[in-house]
Length: 184
Image (cartoon, rainbow, N blue to C red; front, side):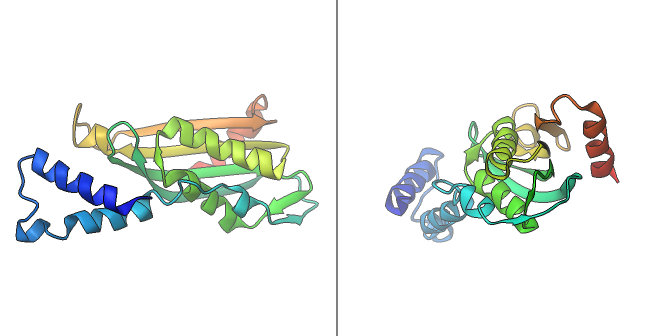
């Protein structure tokens, strides 16, 4: 990430909206925004492999669900936040992963300019690729600031996306079980 380019862009942006970047309250804003970008876009260049590679042998072949994983991301269309919860389930195929690793996988993809539909599939694909489970299901429920504070201005509207891989794709009983477990 190039902090100097970000700082210069913020100065130009402030000028573009009619502000004075030399005003006392804005003097350190370019530096603050550059540091913020390092944090909120920290998933760029990272891969889920570093989190999902460490696995443990398990005879369990029942659904593992981690729900209510809080996330924050940035809409690539408007550069405004969207945030909510991710629910991930998988059916182990001899291997499981530490539970924090699923949340870290979410962070890897959420901390980039992103759209929710893509984020959902990226998480499902990563769990499927690295764990090789019998099946994966991911659901995301998110509030988008581009819907709440601009455009249509409908705060509180949740966007729900899901992705299924493996046996979840055709097994409606497993999908229903996932939904029941998420709603408990």
